[in-house]
Length: 308
Ligand SMILES: Nc1ncnc2c1ncn2[C@@H]1O[C@H](COP(=O)(O)OP(=O)(O)OP(=O)(O)O)[C@@H](O)[C@H]1O
Image (cartoon, rainbow, N blue to C red):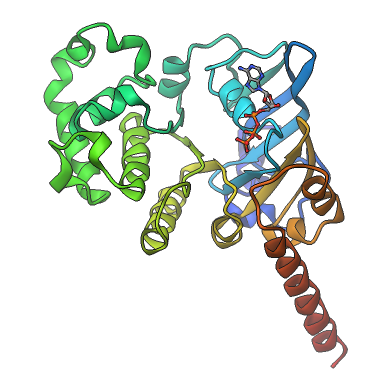
């Protein structure tokens, strides 16, 4: 395919997802991230066994599934924090196999981390500067990490301050990250990830530990990432969030992708309900039931309107 035809036919963002198949591994019109035959075993347990997956550029994709489905392990594999037993995966067509996490971050894909004890002992601005290195933190904590930003110190600090203002954390600049509320920590995790100006932002349970009052504001921040043209992939148990902001949902169970689709179609999918029923879960199943009911009612209304 020539570049010209690619530009003509490729449909970027949420619009491109209309009409995409809901079978696991469904092809997307403009995938930015593609993975094939990824497996990861721990002893006798196969934690991840993903045959094929494509992530649409410029859209918000949720990765859901019951506890132990392999979501976090899959995130770690894609971002180089863990190595699979088999498989290949690429960002913008460039293989990421064997690429170190900080290089993956510099290539344009970064994941958030829950604030660990080490990061909690750093101030907010120090956390942001560390974000510029694309590192998780622990590994370089032993070293005097100031050298890592060295000459570009001013540039890095300016960028950090801009992001802190955007995420309304500027007043917390000199506070220890450990003193932040659950919601503020999530904002910091997101702001920190943006220090490398990534194409793909991977959020690990962005709503965990966030009080309801802050949830809307957090949702707004996630949507703003998409509005800037970035691709967002997030793991989440909070079905309200999944329904509110996802353009596409990928469902994992026992290491495999079992279904894909829009939030409405996925929540009404029997394969998804079975996956949750067959496993221990944090998700309130009544939310799935509610979503299914809503989808059925919507379908009925649409049918009625069609027959008018
Ligand atoms: N380092 C490890 N050593 C051994 N087993 C592991 C390791 N990491 C993950 N597992 C196992 O792999 C499986 C998948 O775990 P993973 O954390 O990826 O699931 P998850 O979908 O993210 O779950 P949750 O929603 O509860 O966070 C689980 O059975 C888990 O116990």
